[in-house]
Picture (cartoon, rainbow, N blue to C red):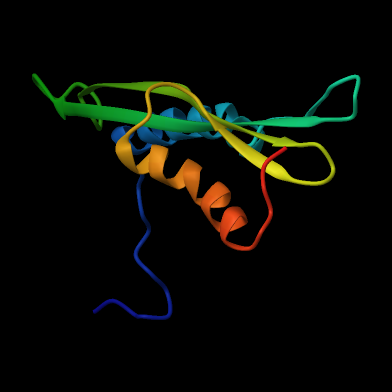
Length: 128
């Protein structure tokens, strides 16, 4: 009978090390600086911060094949893909912050861009 105080020894299957290796490499490639980029300062003091979206796909697989020559007659592989897509830029001139979208704009994006102007006009603040 197994004693719950002393757990049964866990022997790592080869697929675990393949997956750990793939995920470890992805972790080294991705960090917060990729999503929220380093600020870029212009000559007039404006700060531009790039914002990106990261998509990651990982696949791993394997199986035990053939006659048992070793403890694990195992064949396996893993693959990963990653894309970094710029989404927008935050632009700050010290007085206000604006968001500049990258790429095509949806109807929602166009409506959201007009909200500050509409709110400003309601409270008597007009764009210069």
